[in-house]
Amino acid sequence: LANSHPVRDADLAPVRADPGPVYANRGLSGIDGTIATATGVALATNTPTTLLCGDLAFAHDAGSLAIGPTEPRPSLRIVVADDRGGSIFAALEYGQERFGSAFERVFATPTGLDLVAVAAAYGVPARRLRTAEEVAGALAEPAGGIEVLVVDVDRAGRAELSRSLAAD
Image (tube, rainbow, N blue to C red; front, side):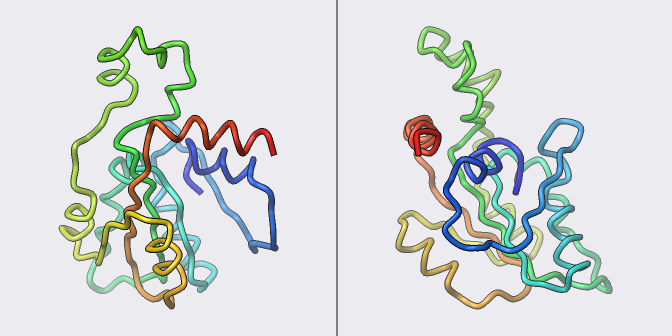
């Protein structure tokens, strides 16, 4: 799990079944090294591994997708919750509507990157998913190799989701 919303949401969500081992790390800035860590976990455990991260964590560590041609390839599925910026910061004082454009530029920091194209630039298969059904279908597919699933997430709905998880 990447830092930011994914690890917090997982902590709040009720566990319906044993998910098996769950790994997370905290880099110097909180999100650095996320893909590298997941790659290491997948290789060290020799187990198909799924990483859940946000778009900023993915963009910050996308260089870890560059794996040398003679290096082993992990079975790693990277699920990117793409809310086009750091929505977690909306919970701070500066997330108030009156700070509008300053919040967007300084805290949300949307990259404008096409994350599917970023993965493809490293030779990693990737696709964008827009519905819960598409996500469920993609996650039900057999894992193998590295793949990136970019999931559209409505940033405005993130705060409501977090409140809902916290209330349960």
